Image (tube, rainbow, N blue to C red; front, side):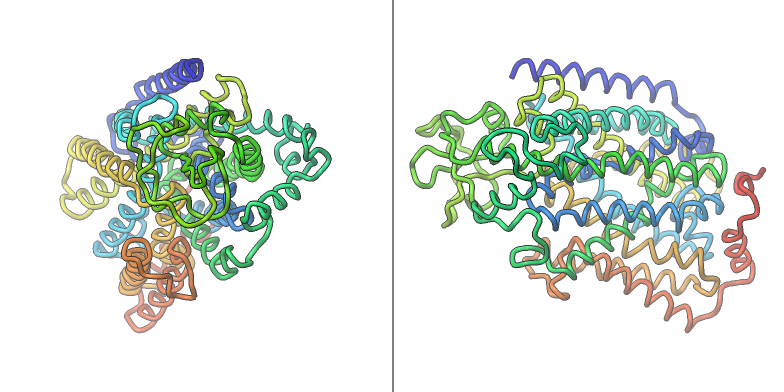
Length: 592
């Protein structure tokens, strides 16, 4: 244990030092450097930075954890996020880059010739970004609480301070080059344990192939890994790992809705879109989109393998094992409250079955039970399951479960922090630029000096960090679920307005404002009802994570209907739309 902690302090200290050094070297004094890194980032570097920005704590920590527990239906996150990135790269990025504005509200305000539309877009951007950044802060807290032996709240506060330093100091320029370093850290941290565990379980060093291979040794030797997982799951009362749409799984319409909400939410996420303004040309935007897709695919194709390896190893090392003989990884994680055991039948053994072990999350008294375990005060639920496992620990605990060296465990901790902090910094910049540029400079005070705008932007980064930290300490769900809600809000507000703004000359400001308000309004009400007010999902049984797809359809419909019933946009707006869609040369948007 001491060895793991020592390695973790070393790895985390080294990577944090690197990020701060890069931020200090990249510090900026003007708004163009602060918002879009001066527009001079090479496409390859921008592709890596986009990959890091994109692969948040949800991708690194939580996505594999959810697939690990839900099997096939958990892959909605994988399909939605990957498909969404393709949609963004093909449908939006090059056109928005050619338009040449700093932010999404800037595009909306100018395309729909309305400060009201700009402010509505700004509010939507802040809502989506704050929801998303809350998930990152929870990820930071989980990593710190386990590996540096501080409580989750302290971990979140440390993460807040680091992000504030390099987002406030270097702006987009500092964030971009920091994210290049963070991509290298997080991808190595994800791949090294995946390769080692794939080799251990299946004898195949390529996780994507090991996932579909046979088990190399032990009681299940010679059987396919997925076939074995199906049998184990069914024996313990769970659904089959590879089964789809049956009882206990998500319905087909829910899977489609979540996948669609994640796809179009991706394409509407402001912190990813702004990355395409940081390259010098439209061709550079297309190139960096291609590079980013490659860098993202490396992690996303590995995640399903990591999921099944972690699940197989966890059940193999815990099921029906006497608590006194439980492996060290279990005892280490038990201290965080993210895994817990309640001995219902008094036999001193860990029984893992389908069903909740007790009401709510574990609530420890601090006393030792008859087997040396922490005593839990929560009322037990009437089923045979005695084990509580928080899904968000699976990737982080995976190297310990597989008994990999301490330095690998520490590297995964550093990778989890890199994933969370890289995305958090991008989101905080979106919030800061939305208020300082889109609200203050473009609406309230067009005469504001460069110095005033920079000062306000840095103050807003600080305010956003504090709000994000609060939600990181009091999160409304698992990391990936919180992030899915952000995607739903982006899907129902931005995507239709961006697509119609680029591809339709007839859509006007009245339609855009009505569509955004209707789309995000419906989505917010549904999420509030089902997440916080105890109302069962009532629209075709679609879960709150998928309702953004319905909000998007409402937005499209309202925008088109209202636009057709009101006055067409002015001629100069129609000419602007035509020029954005027509490829007249790669350098045009940058004034070359």
